[in-house]
Length: 110
Length: 352
Image 1 (cartoon, rainbow over the protein chains, first blue to last red):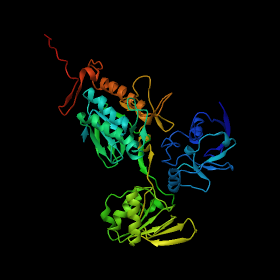
Image 2 (image 1 turned 180 degrees about the horizontal axis):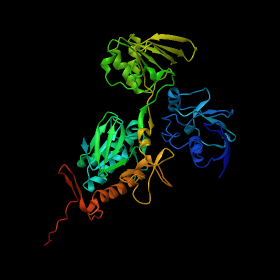
Image 3 (image 1 turned 180 degrees about the vertical axis):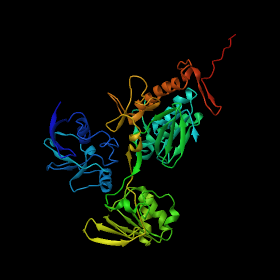
């Protein structure tokens, strides 16, 4: 049983400091949903298959993250509001070395 | 006017299975779906993904699950209104409902079952300020009638199968086809990617990558677009008659949100202690579209909800009829098409 600390800025600009378990096979999108930091139905629409961009977020800290998969790369190429530091939350799995990770949720697509 | 016993809004797995459970009770169903094919997300978003938590199926592809459900409900002859979105609902004096789609198709039923998942799938629109000004005046998100692009200068944006396939298709019809995508890589069937490469080499498709459309210009109709190369930041203007952004679909709860139903967390609140009825008697919500304490958005939960909903619907339609649930192992399945499936009778014969 181990938790890491994350800083998550929601779509209204509010900062949340949350604990995320690393032993529950959770990803960042699921952590956001578990704390209800974005309304249900506006995040994780495809369920975490990198097939929608509803969990897009911007990485604000300089943690080294795993490379993007082809699916994630392709989805981000079609998403809106994409920045250089954009990632899909569902593709970022909670691991010990992500302790202190800071992210900001991208705006909801209209 | 289409008449049925249970009008199901949404032809995903939950809506399809509801047809089966209703059929066992001799209730007829009709389904409305905004997508052109049944199956909902399973067909539209992830047909090739395996699902591992359907009871009795250690592994089944989402597309196969839909095929199986269609086969299972065939004897009950469901009607379909596909490619149309349920828009308006009207309650008649006798307590029944008329649901009208965006194309004006009317459906009349005593029971409405909303199995709308996350909502109806709408095209994702690029973020361009004056985009709506040019809708139907050069900008379209779906290609309905390819002939209208004959001898036109067409610009397609997107990196998936539909962008590739339509570029190939229109290359023979339009006078000029330009394909714009933010990356050099496309996500599509290998055949399509190779075909586009071939057409590009022949000069039949003008490929501009990596780039994106950043501006639309025109007086009445679309006349010109601005394209920015994402690698060099160079901007080019291109004269076009049509701009077709094909960025896939995303679900929206849509008009159902205005039907007077109690909504919480983008979902419809239902009574989970009984029958998944909404705050409007006669309207039920089943599957991913509903919410209640402890709700899980799982296909298997949708199946259960559909089953209980049908029992309640039966009681509502026939308040005076006595009925007890019958196992299919006992009663078999009698279709509206005259088909009958049942367990083979055991042979009673003495052995000398």
